[in-house]
Length: 399
Image 1 (tube, rainbow, N blue to C red):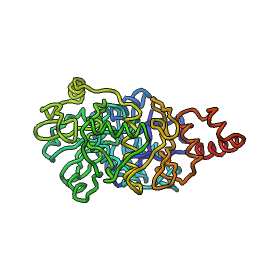
Image 2: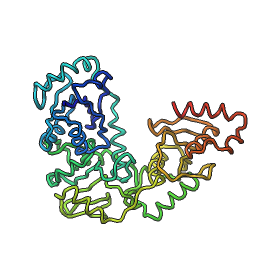
Image 3: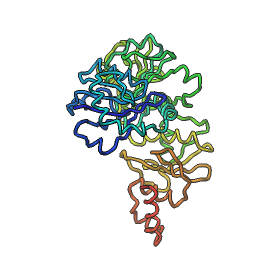
Image 4: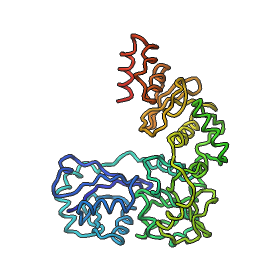
């Protein structure tokens, strides 16, 4: 079986897949995988292809980093990986395999190479915030490496191959060096950390001891408010400070590998340690599972930094606004409510957009987020208007 994907690569080096037509996806001649490059490791990718009996895999891409990635796969795994550009010129691999792909895919790519809006700017900002705070989205598995900080280029050769294999396909190495990486040993995105700091792209952040951080979180839970006059976008080592079981970043220095940005927790002094060795050592560090309140707080803190005024109030499932009830389980969120500078907003978490709304909408949104929109109290408050209001509300939030 031949696996296929058309990979788009933006300026940062982040991979995404071009959506292929239904007829191509239903083809019996090729296997079209749907693995997410953000939330799966290189090992996950290989195991998935092996499970589906893929013997050859063809990447169709005009990217730059994709060459390093394909060479890495061929060095370390049994499946044969091939690469051609969108004109089907063979870059790596077997010309005959690529010719077979061209026959079926040339029409698919003739009119549109699948260029999408380049999200590298927001991806870089989010990635840097996650690196500094350690507060990664719930969709990222607890031990999936997303960011590897390496203090200088000479340390890069110390990294064990296994570290890359257990890193997300869209993971990044951050180094204080502008030297481009061309070697197949390095399949990750490369970020010049020195340039990041010179260009002042790191998020505005500060460190808080655990008791002060817990006070902020308690105020948010009990009142829904965040007071952020300094416009702080993140708390340095947030996850580590709260002892949350997250192992999504590594920091390499000449004296050892650290778990946290502030270098307070050295995992090992052995720089060539394998991933499983690091994971074993990390298992001895006392941690606890994240709860939904801890997960959402970094998001609302970051949002508050971009709003007017010092104080913002958020309507979430895990904080009190008008409804005292909160929930204590993780759930998918599309909208949050915001009260800021006398105005009311609904914030779409999925597309990062805000819409001005009224008190009634926020009232219904709070009950909905807390899974109690059929409340008799809500029905009584809006009386005969309830059916019309809830119909309009649902048409907006479900759009």
